[in-house]
Amino acid sequence: MFPTHIQPELKAQETAAQAEAAQLENPALGLQAIQLGEQPVQLRFAKPSVSGAARPLLRLVNSKDCRRTALIRVFYQDRLVRQLDVRIPAQWASFILDLTKVLGQNADAWPEVLELAIAAQENPVGLVESLQPGPLPKLLVGGGQQFVPTSAWVAVPVGAVSPLQRMLGDFLHSRAATDYLGWMIGCTTTGLSDLYRATGNESYRQALQRMLAGVGEGLPLEGMKRRGEGTVEEPGYIDLLNQRLESFAPVAALAHLQRTQPTPERAGVLRILGQRMIETARITRDFLTSEGCFTLAFPLAATATALDETDWFDIAWQECARRWDFLWRGAQVIQRAYSDGRVAMVNWARGTAWLVLGTAQVVLQLPPEHPGRDELISRLVRITPLLLQRQQPDGLWPVFTDRPDLPAETSGSAGIAAGLALGAKAGWLGGEALQAAQRCGEALESFIEPDGCLGGVSQHNPAGEVALQERYRIRAAWGVGLYAQLIAALV
Image (cartoon, rainbow, N blue to C red):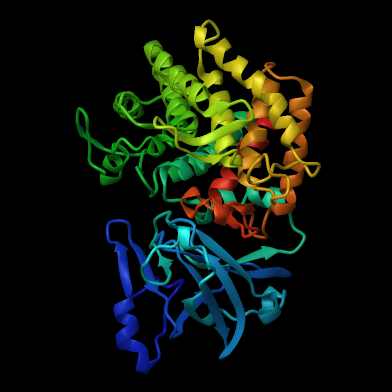
């Protein structure tokens, strides 16, 4: 049986096939999913708690990173009401459908239970580089009482708050802010941590702890029970210790929590994680990525601060410095470069953000007397004129920053601007950098979707450079996390 808030009612002639399609994606987490196909699946959604004028939105959450293109069709009372052209960018990605034309905006007149039929079909769009064979999308349709992602009927009161307030309030505190991959989680957890430190608002700390205690790659990190030295009961913790440097991004927020609310348990977890990050940094690789500044150097530096492990600062700043040496080549900022000369994602906005924002966050952790601090600051100072030159009149950066003919990319823009704002507020960069960050923050507000999620985000880089150059954009919780870091830096 599916959870009561989303309970499929299958037609008699479909029962056997549809029941086989509904399956537990992860029994330990209570995640449930239903496979979409050309035959519509009947779903029921309970009415959200709202009254008065509101926009009814249907949030559909994809189960797996199937990396497919598809048409999702939604039927109400046997009539096609919406059709979505979707490209699955990542596990737990979500899509929004506005049902105002179907239900109106008088929430008092909405049905207590919304019955819809949802189907999907292939939709070839020529993005061969990004496609993978496999089934059509699945939808997450439940998660019990745990703080896990799920498809839902949500309501947005008309005129109650600004889009930015909805992003910083409702969205960041909801299940919709959950992501699966560690680097994605790290964007949002860092955003919540930065907002908490900048504003003192306890709701951000509570949302952060709820997220760190939730699900995703490497989670839970908060509230674990240790069985003995170096071991933890929760299986999610083991997932983080896999030498994928992107997986460590949420550790920075855990370290910040330890500084404000120290506990022996959290210190023990951070010590183990710190050693694992050092081991990961020492692995010999034939490539480097700019993500390492944000997902490895930053959490290691934050952990060093929380535990007063001064030797770890050396490793953190060196991880940043060698990426600058290898990936910044004058007018080129490379997201991934190999020792044999191959490069990928040159001047990609989000790749630039990882380098700039990650480095700024590392510098803020380094002791004032640390010799690596001035060296990293000098890199930020030297690259700032290039960043300012490539910012467009609308305040954003194109998806590839040296291509003004291409559309903007909101998450990369937020990350670049956050790095500039942190540097300006700390006194390393000038007023021009702060003004650029402020213009970007103002421009991003127009990309906030009705439920508070950031739209205009480029797909995650496995989609390939051709797909990223197109005008197709997604909504992404990790984009909200990067924007939240910008807002916190501007407070």
